[in-house]
Amino acid sequence: MKVKIELSGGLELLFDKKKVHEIEFSDKNEIPLKDLILYMRDNLLKERSELFVVDDTVRPGILVLINDADWELFGGISYNVEDKDTIIFISTLHGG
Image 1 (cartoon, helix red, strand yellow):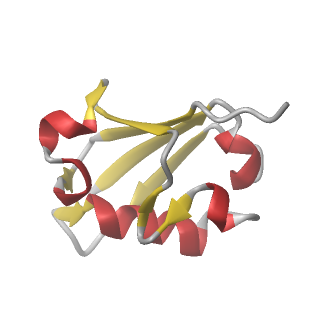
Image 2 (cartoon, rainbow, N blue to C red; image 1 turned 90 degrees about the horizontal axis):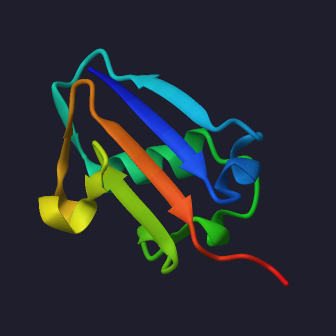
């Protein structure tokens, strides 16, 4: 199973300044979105996890899109990510 992850709005800075990550899970056909987020935190995130994850979900102020649609339309954190899905994380939080 291959999943494409896109980061913007400054989130890419926490992930080694990479806006796009391609992840392959060779032993799975689907993975809960919650598990994907925790995988990202544990394996891709380079700094300040509290700016991305709070209580095992994305922190408030981060928009999540599944194949260009709001994740709430798919059940939010309980969605099962499938092969070739694109998950987009957009931060609406900006320092000042």
